[in-house]
Length: 145
Image (tube, rainbow, N blue to C red; front, side, top):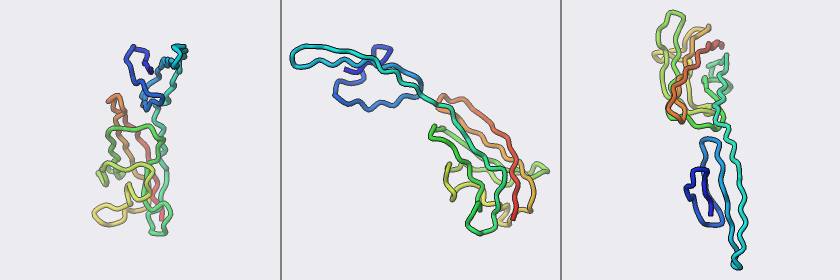
C-alpha cells in the first residue's frame, strides 16, 4: 500500500502514479504471500521555483534567428501569464498570453503591423503560480536589426 504523510491511501498496486506539487513523504508497505511485511518511507523533494529567462535583446529582421521575443522557463507550470511591451512613452505595443520556450510565440517586434524602431522597450511579465499567487517581473529589451 502507498500512504501519504496525512494517512491518505494513495494506492495498492505495485506501481504508483503520483504528482507532487510540494515536498512530501510516502509510506510504502509490502506484504508477500507468506504474510511477511516490510515498510519504508520515501521522501519526495519538489523544486517548484519557477526559473524564467527573459532575453535582453532580439532582432526581428526576418533572418530566422531571434525574430521573436520569447520567454524561456523551466518545467514548473504556471496557471496564467501575460507579457506586455511598452515604448518609452508608456504606450502599450503588445500584450498577450504566450507559449513558453516556443520560438514561434511571443512579440514579433511589430505595432500596428509595422516594425517598431530600434531601441529599448519596457517588458512586464505577469504570471500566477500553482498556489494562485501573482508575480510580476519587469525588464527591458533592446530591439535591433
